[in-house]
Length: 248
Length: 162
Image 1 (tube, helix red, strand yellow):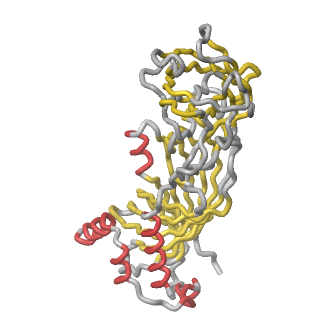
Image 2: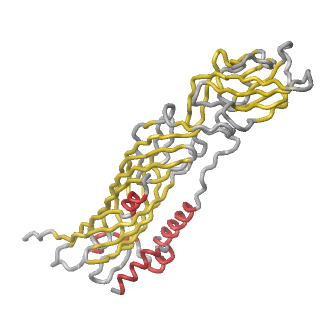
Image 3: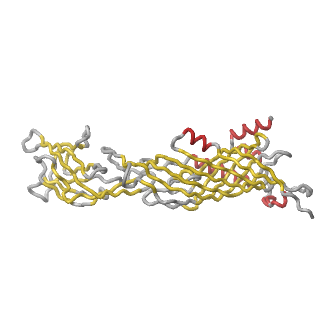
């Protein structure tokens, strides 16, 4: 009970400084999975498939008419350190960039691994992890309306049809995400998680006569800069399972 | 090793939160205004100054005062014509003013996206008859195209003889 409260507090704090107190330098050679395999040979290995969703996006969709989005998250526990993880999501976001109003709609997929460096007490499955993802989006931009950029502000008009208004061709961005996050068990098999993500663009195609100003999953794309940032706040349910041991 | 990675990661997050928003440099050319030079109708090679002001017909405030032989003003690019009232002091008589409403004609607006901070700018082409007086003119005599396609404001596009 007490543990739960401490963890909830930790999630809400999310301080980088706190992490340093918790980490010990483990030689990278120990990351080798073989070293961490549980020595008890009698018990079969327990895997766990954890699935859930990012709760920020549905909340945002509810209160913000310019945004609709959903992200499903999942990970597969291979051992206490290594998780195979993925996120898939879909977004439709209308926004104003300077004088241009545009809508981006599309979806994305992120696949990678998480490395849990938190040493749990026996029976607990909390995680403090670093992750890596390869991500790709598929999206289109639609220019809704705009004002021409002019230094003379005497005559201001909004163009909402014709000219550059309209949908552009589909684009696909690729990027890498470096993740730092935590997952905490709230109830048996229920987890809350938060992660911060640093995104690094690998490819940035531009649409005809417009800019690729935003990509679902990546967020804002700025000129002359390939970095982006994101975060998610997830609720997940874990399904532990074992493979039946083959008879020798 | 991992500690270093964490430090770097935290540092990057901090740097990202301080990210500067792109600002469109004031020197960046926007959608070009129409640049008009005023010439003497009786001596067409000579520039001739005028003083007064111009105002778009549907606006309640003046665009600018004219004082010299050069005027620059924007056009309504959602249409193919913009009307400005030219109120010019009558220098020869000494009192009174001319008030000519001139319609500027153009076509082929072409919009181009530049970049995030600056957005979209337009270029357009003056019609063969770039200026049509709405009422019989008292100050305006004739006009002549100097550059028909307005891409920038580096040179005058139109000459007005008065």
